[in-house]
Amino acid sequence: MARRGGRWTVRAGAALFCLGIALGGCIGVPDAPRPEAQAVPQIEPGPAAVAGNVIGTGSVKVALIVPLSGQGAAVGTALRNAAELAYEDFQKPNLQILVKDDRGTPEGARESAQAAFAEGAEMVLGPLFAGSVQAAGSAARAAGKPVIAFSTDAAVAARGVYLISFLPQSEVDRIVDEATAGGRRSFAALIPETTYGNAVEAQFREAVARRGARLVGLERYPAGNPGTAVERLRRVIAGGGAQADALFVPDTAEGLMAVAPALTKVGFSPTRVRPLGLALWNDPRVAAQPAFQGARFAAPDTAGFMGFAQRYQSRFGAAPPRTASLGYDAVSLTVALVRQYGSKRFAHETLTNPAGFSGVDGTFRFSPEGVSERTLAVYEIRDNAASVVSPAPKMLGPSGI
Image 1: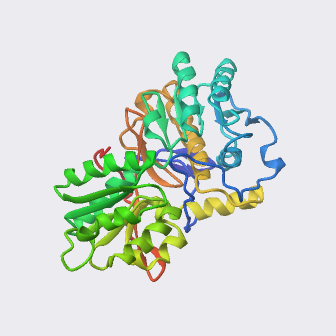
Image 2: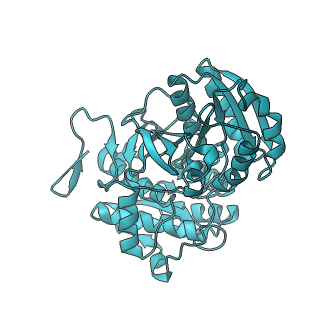
Image 3: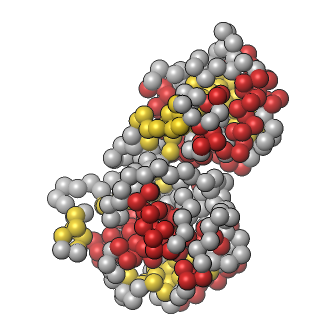
């Protein structure tokens, strides 16, 4: 799509729908929104940011269901603010966003969805938490309406319930693909004993097998206590006889603060066995660890986030959490579909267009099963900082999820 005279039009032959106004480059540090996006304590958007329960006056109605009170209220408020920013950037399109507070509970989400559909909403944006998505999804199915949700739990995705969030499955595929393309063929893994770890392990095993590589060792460890597992893996990842040439550690920044010294203790050398991670590695604390120098991780390209964050800060007087851009992209997508697809704007076939859509966080698409795939960059840690070594592709290839 190209902007002409305040309107958005599709370029001839364009494969993607450009959803956001072009924003400047940036460096963003994902706070750990997984396994679920939680409230970020430092966010203080202020009471003015949540005033009003409707954004816009257009004839096409959609609902934004997020926690504005209770658990997750800070992140929910940021998503609401980002939705308003997108509406303003698109110069007040023919859209009316009914903002509903689900109070961070499944009951609140169900009530909000039912109320929104009674008011004429054609689609739900949100909720944030997995249980709330399930509850809103049930109400949406009964009404024959779609949901574009912010949960990071792929288990709640389904036909008609699409997750626009940052899912670890795409990150696992990207980092394994990049490592094998670079000649790494023998993988080991240290994975926390969490729900997130379970989901990531399954995708990791699949990705390694798909690329014809070997899994030479895998150990699980209680969250925050990796020492014993690292010791069990010592012969595979440390010393001159190390069998692995890559070590996958999908943990949060906090968890990695315990993993790094445990690796150093057993003589792990990141120059011999490359550490691999996911987007949660994009944290200065991780980059400062000697055990992770030379590590690579997959994460959304941050080329759009800082510009968005600056605009958000200027508009609302506070820095947004990393997940706030999802609210912006959800509304941007909605605006583009309203303008281009008429009565088929929110149809399953429209939402699952295999070409995908382009937003602040890069190109993404929804599978028929509701999970999202994203183009991702690969970052490398050197000299206590992370920089891009493989940019995010502009277009998505064949589905890997």
